[in-house]
Length: 400
Ligand code: C5P
Image 1 (cartoon, rainbow, N blue to C red):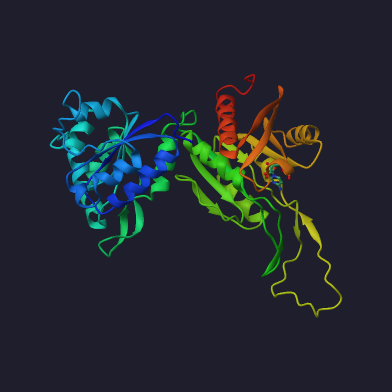
Image 2: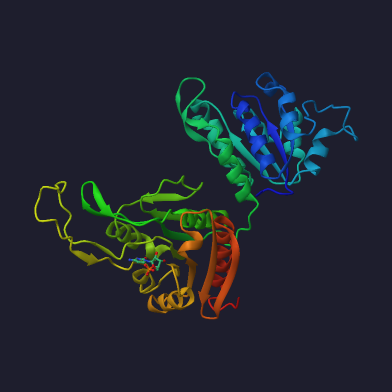
């Protein structure tokens, strides 16, 4: 319930993507938001107000001269009652009107009269999106602090393919959740690793581990929610990329090391969440090793570079944060690693508590000792870790 207690006014403008707004309302309500829907007259040709009323559990406004509203001014009422105004889909026509402050129907009047933040999820044909007029409008709205969500690229209702598709409802909800998070990392660059590494033995086999990547992806999402520009270098995982995060897929530790070292010096923060293999096979067979090859092969291992320790040893290192997954003696091992790698902060967790699951228990170790974060979903823990990182960026010796 990430949107508990939030009041969202959803404006639906006329476009075929309006049908997705129905699913959007359902997801917003599921996250705990109270949703009021306002539709343009054009939108009612695609979806009926009854659909939105049933899904939101609230009356739907279409007409700005709605006599049912106490003060007779639906636009004022709807904006007074909202923590955010979200227009999804936002048509090219709506965006153009919003730029100039035109107020000729309920949606545009509500937009002009609002005293809450405005987020728009554009949806239009790719030619309309690429038209210089729309480009100018988007630039102006961005300058006016309007949040532009998407659009995505792909197949369009008109049969063409390109940029202009409305984001999927799940993605819009993720953006809305991010909107409500504090932004202590605004303007900061965060580089991260996540997931396992896969150390090849031959073209089809390798050494790896059971890291799911979930904790690292949650940290990446939390850092982006906090306003950072996030680059996530990850080993093989089957997880969707958090919105707004730049993802670099790698396989083995050497590749992960190379990608990280290329970027590390320009970052404010480096967080190593990946379960990097300590060793890799010295020789990678070019051909698949056959069972008949006698005797059974002996695989010689060589040590991988310690990515985190190397980043921490840079002349001007970013703030370095490590993770320690242990099966026992967590406090002792985590603190030992923190000192060995010369990093200010390490997050420890017991493998049995967190590996693969969506919840975890974390203990933060720093120069002041340990801080236990109570068991919680990984995203909630990731946000707490990021909050601590933001504090340490401002004051490296800040107490708990
Ligand atoms: O493997 P270990 O327990 O030492 O990992 C502790 C921390 O060091 C983790 O944050 C991990 O991402 C990082 N690490 C690394 N490169 C390695 C091994 C570990 O960056 N080769």
